[in-house]
Image 1 (cartoon, rainbow, N blue to C red):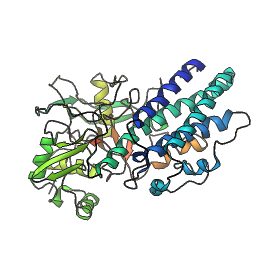
Image 2: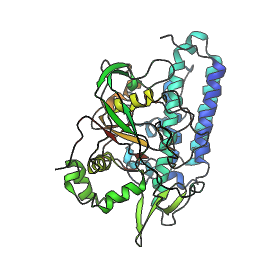
Image 3: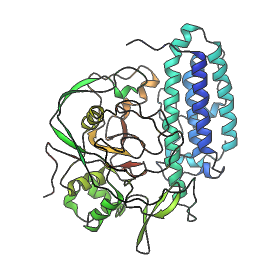
Image 4: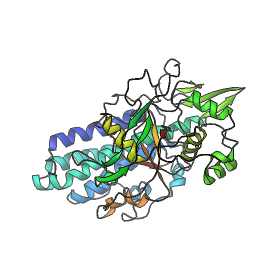
Length: 428
């Protein structure tokens, strides 16, 4: 593979686009909105804005800026997320305690770093630019990850407000559920992993062979209406459907519906970034954990696809090219639409749980230095999701992308695509 030739003008243009989009997402929020941390998994909006700035300051400016000095010494500590090699960091679960710097001061920090990064790019000689280009590009994709997290997190923040505030927009007209179809896949010895052209995270490499038995995969996502049938059949009360750890979560945390559903005097409603509305049976179910996805699949006598099955099915269906996601966030999943004979809702609706643990590919080696902590250190106790969601920024989804969360996580925009064939786990 030939390394790309980095062009200063293109890098600077892309830098400004990515950085501006973060501010666009934060713009509807008040300073008070941006400070709240509603649970340990959620980070305040201003922390996301500051952390992605810290990333460029730490891995770009500190690496190449002459006479580098941090913008503010304490920011180095406050806005480090998990990079042990960089130094100590503030406790994640207490980020909401950081009332100072405020949202305005974080904006000043962003402006300072933005100016310095642009000046640095303009000043680099060709050799240094080629050396630093991959790190700058990683910074773009890192910030896009946090753009999606920013929206997922503020969704939770607004959900606990009794006024049920709206972040943006209104929901689409109610939709009618349609028939579930299937795509049959031959299997065999197939290649998975990133092909090598264009950007990828290190965990998408190396491309390698794996064997797949013949299988079939659902052409659309599981809907709210189908999930209601699971609930009505006692899905959250039947331990035989659940993995042991999942059933422990059901009983200890009182799960009885997807994360953002609430029972309003006998009618289920769902909180979204559009506000709180009656559950639409034709939309994909969202904000369910891997445990819930697995229990639902078991109830149906089916299973979740492996990540290799998901990736290979998308490729053979002709959807392996970079998807054209909407330029503006949709903020919520859409109905599947009419059957096409191809997979529907591959990207841009919900991340889709697979049955695969998040583990390294054969031959995987993390990069040297602190950047090597980006993905590899999390390859334990996580499950892989594929696709993308209605919150995923344009240019950030691809069929080899490996997202990952703990199996009990529900606040991520995650949904369910079913598979069949092989040996599904069947209830007793």
